[in-house]
Length: 173
Image (tube, rainbow, N blue to C red; front, side, top):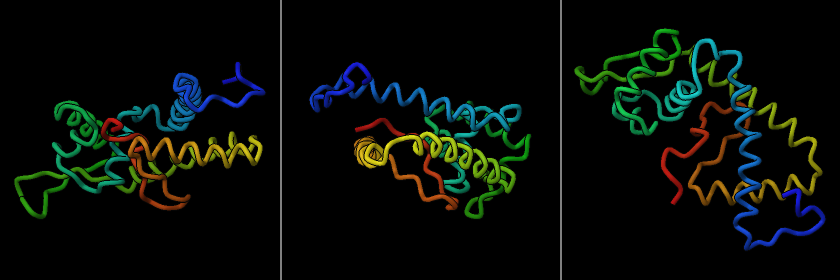
């Protein structure tokens, strides 16, 4: 929205808002990519997402994991195989049905989720700290409205061990 600097944006200009969100999303994608650099030789961004799903939902069977990720069960199985191979996830028998296998986050997987999330939080805090206080308040209001419109739950305060997916597991309504 730099082309409009000095003027208030028109609230009805959906294209201007869309461009601003797309520009900001490039920043956030960069933050996400950089936050994985310490583990990128072990896992990919989609595999990290699976770890986050397990941290939010707890142990789940293959079909639930695939549904939450929006992928085919065969794709989810390959991701699970990779994550169990590096020790970030583990298979266990379901206490309710011995024939069913659940996938759960290991302590090592929890550490990865915590560390990557902490790196993201720190980098985003660095950007936000360079903003003027009035812009920070406006950003909170705008992003809260945006995420509510998309149906995305809020991220908990630092130190909590429950992480929303980081993106909706369904399209915005």
